[in-house]
Image (cartoon, rainbow, N blue to C red; front, side, top):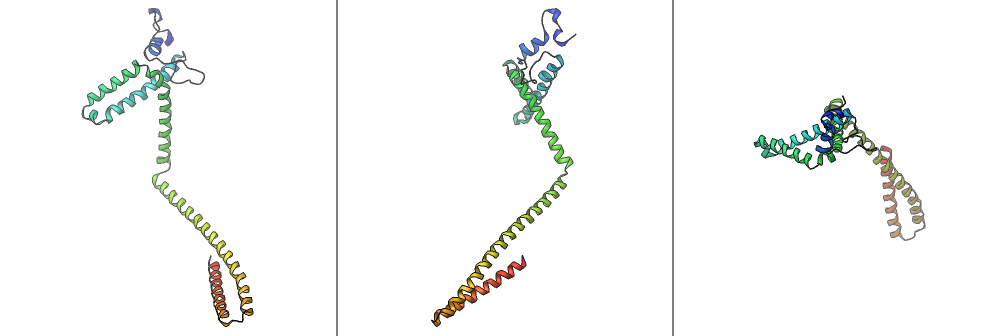
Length: 205
């Protein structure tokens, strides 16, 4: 005998009373197949009654045990949970929450599996080692980029200094004022010294 036909001899349908009159669960649509009723007994019992109830009762249990006042008086917490359940069912909230409760369970299962994968498959010590390796690789890459940029800057400065030296030498040869000539010679020596430093740094990179 099908679930929807139980009690039909007595003139009423238990399924209609439970899902529509009491829990106020809506009929399923093309876009929603969970937390609603289809007329299929097994589907309705599992996805419109059992799964949403497990999640809802678990949620109410956590609330009724987590608050400080309920930890002191567990009977009061139980009374609060019972009153909350009755309110949710009587006001028709259950029918609107059933689908959300189902997807909440799916999300919880996914997060639990993800946590297991990250903590059991990848042991924390191994994760720390991988993190250190990744950090070291990142530092090497960053260091390589800095060296490459520094080398490019030095090569640019080297070309500037090499162009500046002939210009200074030409000015020195053409200059007749001893004081200005001495100043230009000092500047030329400074440029040559800087060029020598740039070349040494380039050779060390």
